[in-house]
Length: 77
Image (tube, rainbow, N blue to C red; front, top):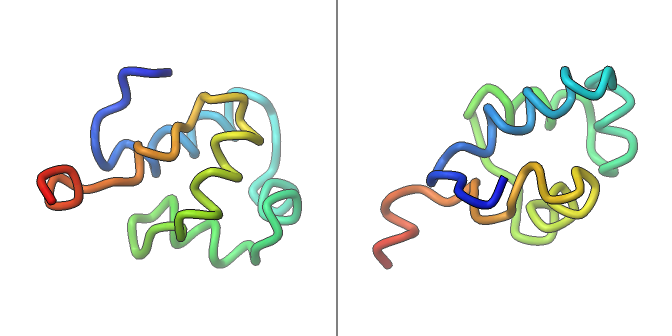
């Protein structure tokens, strides 16, 4: 999805994991983070760093663009 809006990352990540039949634990392992970290990203408690955001984009084949983790404040900076 190339028209992702700022802060869509959590929803897009959850949707990608669900739509592809992956588990959160398996997804976290592939991304090199803990399951808790992944839950925090999906739950909007924190955001991935830039390296992780691009890793998510690559792993998802572009379904979760790195820029989808930016907030409105990030976009206006």
